[in-house]
Image (cartoon, rainbow, N blue to C red; front, top):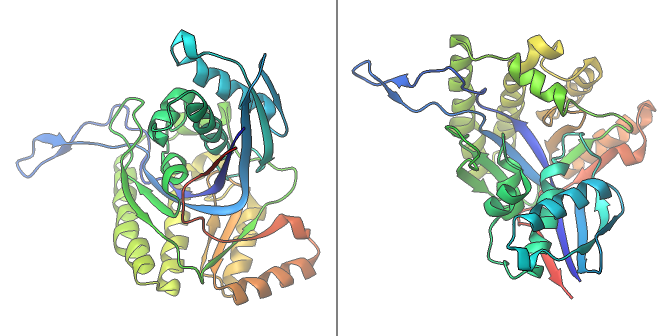
Amino acid sequence: MIRVTAASRLHFGLVALPTDGVPPGPNAEGQPALPVRQFGGVGLMIDQPGVEVTVQTADGWSASGPCSARALAFAQRFVASLPAERQDPFAIAVERCAPEHAGLGVGTQLGLSVARALALATGHGAWGAAELARRTGRGLRSSVGVHGFQHGGLIVESGKTSGPAIAPLLACQPFPDDWQVLVILPRGRQGTHGAEERDAFAASTPRERDLRRTDILCRLVLLGLLPALVEQDLPAFGESLYEFNRRAGEWFAPWQGGVYADSTTEERIAWLRRHGVRGVGQSSWGPAVFAVERPDVLHDVRRRMLDLGELHEDELLPCRAANHGALVNDT
């Protein structure tokens, strides 16, 4: 039996929209020569709730546990990409899985976990996350989760010029051990996904002001988030993170009615800011909200939120960064 344990992914935001119809940027001579990239983004791998799957050979296909149908689909797609003589059936067991469509990157982490186990079982253990993603149909937009599965830590990826290729990894930085993450994960709610997500991108056509927003987002990453992380300057990192996440949400404000998914998310983020947490925002489409601070601050904030009576203990997850890639145990 092969067991793969993967972290969960927080997505802090995209730096660019799809570039269909956007011409190359002008160079110093005014010629259209500079490449235009789409998507790109920043995110962080965290140790909870995570994904854990096991795979073993079997006489026929089967899957059990949460998200089992999706895990089975990933497994069969991966095996179908192999030569005919290696297309044996397997039993897949999902032993732990974060909630789907909550902003935690479940699709990519589940798909790559299954693919990593099957790659080992079929003699392809050297394949990296990009190859596993290609064979399971992940990383079509953001590649943060793909690189996070491989490396862990804080991920910055550049976006892609065109086609299905995984966007290049620009930076992978470990998170300080004395920085903690609180994830607010309301029960029973899901963020935008599927057809709604496609509609959101289709409605967000690039315009000149969008290119200026990309410039600002890139500056916040290069001159804000990354140097503050390297210098372990938590106040500067927190302010840069909040600003980056909020401005990234502006891409979809006309479609979703605001920079966050809903008024409840906006109110919670404002409450956290009022109570001294600077690095706060919405992960991907939500509803997950993240807060980055020192453990003592987040412990106090979590207690205060519980005292309000709006959320249960299991909806307020104290997490730490996962500064490593997915773990494999072959027994």
